[in-house]
Length: 175
Image (cartoon, rainbow, N blue to C red; front, side, top):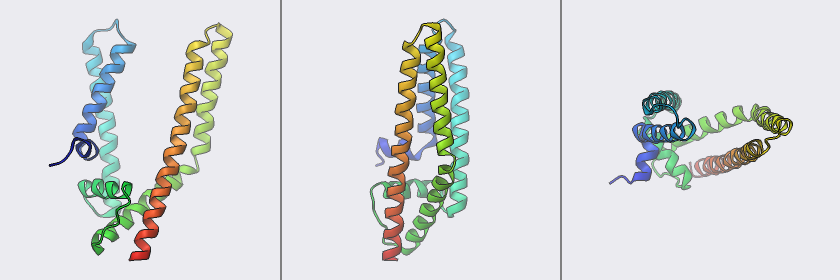
């Protein structure tokens, strides 16, 4: 039987439910004075956009590797757990997946300093506007959140690169 964790990583419906609940929660926190129907419409809109984006990404990865979305989710799970498959066909599929993901990360890495700089500039600008207006609490919390988010992005990128390079070398030395 598939666990809940695997269901959330494999199923677009599960991921859509998470986005819907988060969208409704944020809508309820931020817009308390609006009608709950507005929260639902906005939550559904965000869910459709995110699930559509995820479906397009899965289709592109499936096309690039030649495997179905469920096979790719299973291979990604094996990559996270550093499990090298024994089946030669599955190994070739995993190598194509690893090469595709490494290519995406390396292409995105060219723009990473610019995005991080832009996020820092927005945080600094909001902090400066808050200092001018006398309200520093929200801008300071936002700036700390932006710094934490940027550090999380860098940590996740480094971890993904480490896992993918390890899997590529393991697949090539045993293949």
